[in-house]
Amino acid sequence: MGTGQFSVRPAKDGDRRALAVLFAAVAEERDGIAAEPPIDVDKLAESWKTDGTLVALADSDIVGEIRVDPTWMGFGEIGMMVAADWRGRGVGKALLAAAVEWARVRGLHKLALSVFPHNSAAITLYRKFGFVEEGRLVRHVRRADGQLWDLIEMGLLL
Ligand SMILES: CC(C)(COP(=O)(O)OP(=O)(O)OC[C@H]1O[C@@H](n2cnc3c(N)ncnc32)[C@H](O)[C@@H]1OP(=O)(O)O)[C@@H](O)C(=O)NCCC(=O)NCCS
Image 1: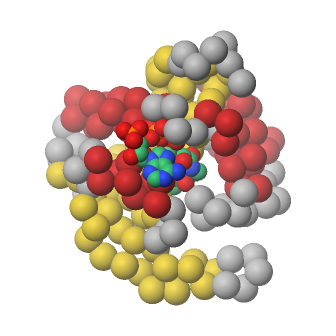
Image 2 (image 1 turned 60 degrees about the vertical axis):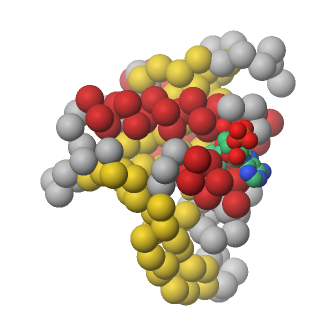
């Protein structure tokens, strides 16, 4: 656990491995994100698109990330995560604020995301920024254990 202070900046090439390691750790939780173990960290690090990724740093460690993937239809899709021991300390809010700004500057008209219905931390965070629920995909995601989870689609007009 660090000092509690963190900063947000665009991702750099040298962040790829730390980003992939963070992703793998959050996937291990089998709760907030759709990906589940095993994650091929080397492959993920190699393929990570840094343009549109913003990172939260504490003592030069990556403690959170958000990605905006602009689509040809003009909206951006986002995905985000914060390291477990950094949650509840404002990192998510700072990342989301930076991503909204990033998207506005690039002229995107909307941000969209998918979230599991049980993920109340994420849903509360998104609602705080004005995201609204636009639909529900029923029994959409098959988990490794065979369960079928719904997804809520949320959107924010910029
Ligand atoms: C969702 C997630 C990114 C939030 O990040 P965070 O750094 O913990 O969020 P913050 O500390 O900035 O909190 C932002 C707001 O979210 C809400 N929130 C945070 N944690 C919460 C919790 N456990 N329960 C309910 N609301 C919560 C609060 O309203 C909070 O605002 P407040 O501080 O003004 O009360 C983080 O929990 C996470 O990485 N989860 C695992 C991965 C994941 O689920 N990613 C999203 C996939 S859609």
